[in-house]
Length: 390
Image (cartoon, rainbow, N blue to C red; front, side, top):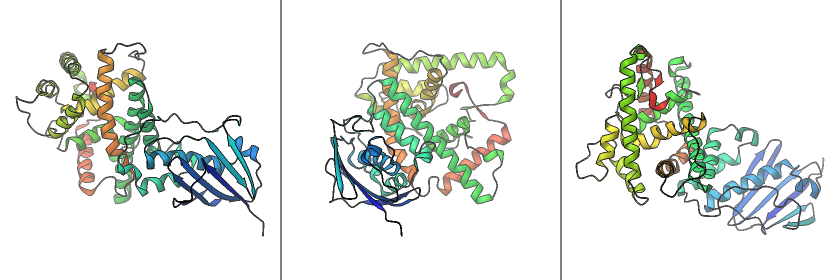
């Protein structure tokens, strides 16, 4: 029997008080990882004998993978990044100490903020932690759940509003893409086939509309699918141009009203818009003008600020139609709009991303509802978003 070499890595002194997680990485069946506050311990065995330089050069893949996971789990469990000041690596019985004097220390760098992330307890769930422990690096790079978590954490760590927005929208994109993927996969499992009508995989415009429908919590068929554009109406050039002009005018008015909000109002605006998602707003509501402006374009205020307006900005930035502000004043409208949108995305994703790790992402009632939407699309040839989502 081939003798295996044992490896132990103690970060900031390691921990023996925390129950370790055990997982496999490729051919390595038992990797032990324990993460405490500002410390971690990694253990594994290999047939190959590695030297300390291999660790410094990150050529020991079980260590490299576990080191990354230790950083991520620390954020999830303790709501802040881990500062690495010392690493003790024991190879069989010989221990080497690495610190700031060691070249390239600490070998893996993090862009995570030193401030508390403000994550909820749902982010500490065993389901989420176990998922990441079992995720290989190769799969992690293309996994929507991993994309959503990492982009969101990056957004929470950014200093500038534009950077936060780009990260938050990347996380939102991963979330609604995962939502659409799950519907299509569930449909295929139920009916043993997946026709074009019900295929939402990599169909951003359709998937984001389905997400809008699910957030509105009422049938958009009743609303005549005002969020969708019928290809048959393309011929009505004059009417489309007139409607487009009206919608742009209402959008400009909405943005002007947003500028009048103060920073303290943003959370209150989120709560109010969510509470009145499907109800009439009284005249005494302080945000009544905003409700009126978005009602005029057939979109609830909450959905407009969470999905529609951010999607417009995303397209303008990513397609090079709008200059990203690199020099801005304290009260520049573009920055203030981004602050409001960022807070909406931050609150929504803080709640929704942990649900991506639940056993049932889409319940039976939601599944049947989305199926009806897909059927309506097919029957009425509504397959593109309107000018707000193009």
